[in-house]
Image 1 (tube, rainbow, N blue to C red):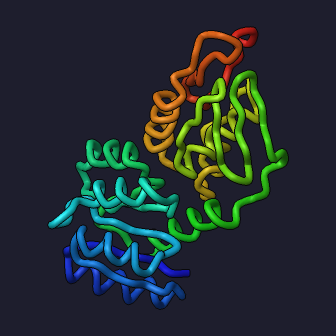
Image 2: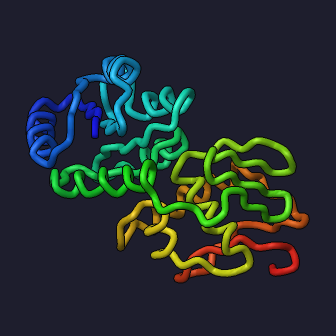
Length: 228
């Protein structure tokens, strides 16, 4: 599996590259955002890891550029107090984030979990899922609402798919995290941010399809008007 790691911290880059290669990953590197874009275009890695604060071009902007033409999974590296950066990153299409300082082992687990879901995830039980005016294609990841195309990231698609497959029923936070990211004990804030982006992209009408409703301390439910 080829991984692009982009960070301007030389010491962190050396340690992380060494550790990830020991874990069996084929790692290519970039030391700024402009180089990260060039390496992504030239080498087409399977997954990209971007430091948020890089010279030349920020990690968020690199992610945005990648999302303009592709769906390569993206993990952001952020500081301890990087909540605004995380929100901005998810808005640009990032799939996950890891907070510095981190252990290379933790990063390797996140990489494997995200890749498993993006490339080798559990097969969807129905290729084309319909919930009122909402249509999701499990093979192409196309989403349409009232025949209007909706652009979702791979993680957003998986979250919406499991909610739609269980429309009218509550899907718990652990179930959503496990289905979308493939690991237990996920970050509720991370999930909340992704759901918020899905809501904005769908702009759900108050008709046959209702809303994505948060059930406090439990999870989320995609409602129909009759089930609201």
